[in-house]
Length: 544
Picture 1 (cartoon, rainbow, N blue to C red):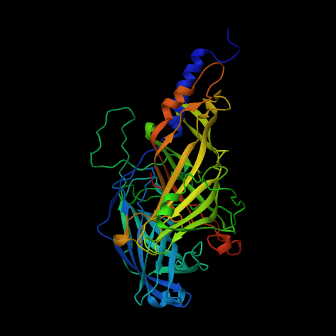
Picture 2 (cartoon, helix red, strand yellow):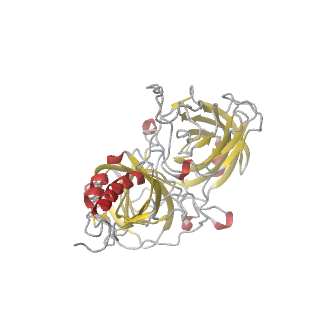
Picture 3 (cartoon, rainbow, N blue to C red):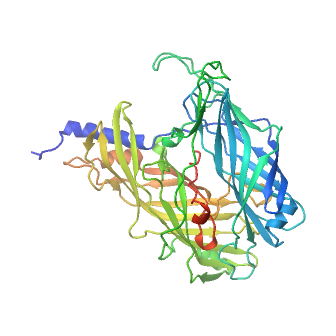
């Protein structure tokens, strides 16, 4: 006879609910988009330190074919090519061998009928480009932007507005065998740009049809095969309260002039952090250091004797192949907020400046993610909650970050972040009733991280056209074909729930999709400064 506990039938039912629980933890959907007819060309007047100068902008962006009432409308990633006058460039970077990079915030004016709201699209980044020459300089900004939500039918338009830039002068990479461990960069210069009046600023428009009044479960016509699904996000960012604007009472309810419509714009999240309070110290994991490539190139290896403590926020999704869904990682909208990733930059370098020209910079990192609290409906109607914890492996707790290549020659710059994290589930409740999965319901082995970021905009043809990643500027990080190990230790009272969690989640073909914000590097005066109110940036969630 078993001891006091939950009856077998109840536990088995709860076990099935546990499998559904994981599906709920990791549910989500994607989106589709279409664009306007060609790029948008605009003229700005920008206040440089040496005086106002005209700046030419070419903006390209995709938008969904259609939207839905009370569902997030997700604009595509904008690309903004700014042509800076040579006089302004020379004033920012007097050294002809220097470089110029930048970050920017574009304010998009979102309108629907008589409603309007401003959406600040921050975190647009332009990689460093050489300033040599006498021609005007083109900086190409790319990034991801948050969604908007509307509460009525009608066309939603997006127009380009004011532009706030932070331009960072720098020096070219050294050419000897022991280069500077990081680009030498001056403090960024803030430049405010105002669009010239009277020009077309429309980036795109999204029609939002009147909702289908057919009750759920009743027969209805199927959508056209060419119509995309409405964008959605798996958690709070798409529906979090933000800036909004409403129409006045009495406005027409026909599409284009909705009655009492509200435009909800996801607001920027403020970190309130201005410094890095953790310095990763330890050893690199040489299982991930490309020693053979160093040897083949005849590279000179240097281990630094100083610390370059830095930090950044990264947030995104874990995508589970078996469930065709995603969970938010390091959610900026959670009650406790996101956690910083700490980096001790370039603790080791391997450089060969002569052909075949090999550049490698190795850094240490530390990442402890916050516990994810999830609430959803199991079986479509039973409220279920759980906590999901990712914790560093105690044997190898640090991240090993390997960057190879340089943008000063025709080489892709590839950064790979290696690490080990254990996944544990606990505090599971179904309809308010605890499901005791035990204190050690976790993967049998740590999940092996290998997040990759690419910088290739400097390559012939502009690279792959996607936003670049660098440790300094941040950007998208991806890991494809991540394997989730089998679960163990799940269940109590003699019931083993390991197989249920393993069947629901474990296996290959999963992925991680993160977006890193701009690096806070106090030692270089970059990305954070309490005296100027420059917080460490929390980036928007990437698109799935």
